Length: 306
Image (cartoon, rainbow, N blue to C red; front, side, top):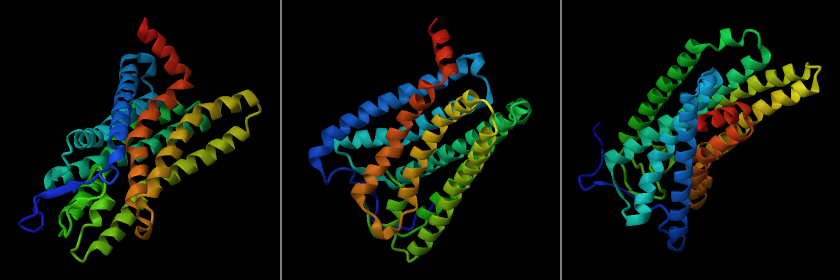
């Protein structure tokens, strides 16, 4: 892939938290602890689901995929950030930067798509309990996940190609990883407005299409629950959906602020803070959110220990 850059252009500099040197040590400790918790929590959920036959259902297969994606997403960003904080090495080559951009876009998009598929799974389970195993069978589950991966890869390839084909007038990235909005700011090719428009439209498709599917699913779920005569059944249904809704709110609130805010209100400090939430905090919290109140996970965990 040819990059239209100056001959002296050898890469970017990730400034990260260099403007707040007194926070570098606390940030380093925070990143390291959260990364260890994220990897341990998500890998445990993934191994538990793979090893326990009772969890080989669409709901938990999707949950295992989400845990795998969270590990990939955090590992794409945090190790490089830790290296910069430890060694002070802020330089990143052009190709490494765009590779990180591509991988983070792929797994980030997969997070959105998997949450939408999980909402669809909950809709089928609540609204069509008798036909659930026919509607959400193994083949359907595999097809939905495979289609999500294919679409995420195609969208991310196009976005990365669009950015990498530009002329850059700057080299200092006011961030701790190569993200789409912060790289666009450095473009001086005259297409930056077009790029931002395309980026906005793509982000709307990646974010709002799953959001609309999730909202549609939960409107129908709530409608079905309200028709239940048993209050205990209603509480059980809402309980099974609460963990998923919590993940949806955490994920989409941060993504919308980061990728759909007007460029006029861009602030490196706030952008880094929000990015910390969706790159390390959300993936770390996810396995705890959908396991603490899940009876099946608790039973499988006890059998796993025996």
